Length: 362
Image (cartoon, rainbow, N blue to C red; front, side, top):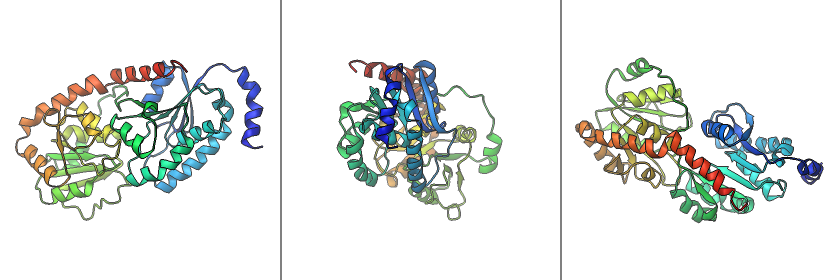
């Protein structure tokens, strides 16, 4: 039985179905707090293939997920065809968009491709013809930055009118305090240190070279995917940890003197999740000046933005190291902006606005 036969077989079911809202995603840990909000406040139900899946995997593994997810969508096509509003996340979004373009979801009035982001300039060029194939008038691309609207309109030939900006914020429930500072002290020998975390689009090699000539300590928390970082060759003042728990990650942030975000390419979403944590804990932030980062912190007011990851980054780190107290007002200003723009309440309002506004005139 081909896909056309499946579609015809479902027609009678569709005629009697009621309007439904559905989330389709690869795994349960894909934007869990946002999905929980959609389910609790906007009446969505959830359809995900795996309860949990690690994000740290090769491109081959991601491509394999794309194929297996496609068959998962076909297996659940009846349920998806009954949905009028669909939020599709991650690699699953491509499969849903493709079948929508083929006309297999006739009752769908809006598909939200949630959290679209592409880090690599090479992949932007490669995916341009792909998006020409799957794009349709019913799709809305939900982006985590305004900067990406222009980027994707130019690189992927997408219409900016179909892009919806929702800041990448913090919808998570407050977590109970977990004291992991003992482990932090053990790893860093109780010394003060700078902190840099995250795995995507990072320029850790430049940061390591800075601290190779710099006496202060640095803790880098990255992923097994960051193969460019070699623990055996870093100087003794640098500690490299990989894929630690979220609680331990936050403990390192709280214990650090300041936090550094060295971005490799100015090509869209990168660094927001870590940056939000730094802002939440009133940390002094030193970051590469990118279109994304500028939407969160302002140079000279709520953080320090540098034009390059070598000389300018070195000067900024040295300035903070030598007179850290004079920069704490940056961390305080970042916290105030976090509360106003990126807190759970602020993001919830933007999500409600997105769903309600895009239903008008559909």
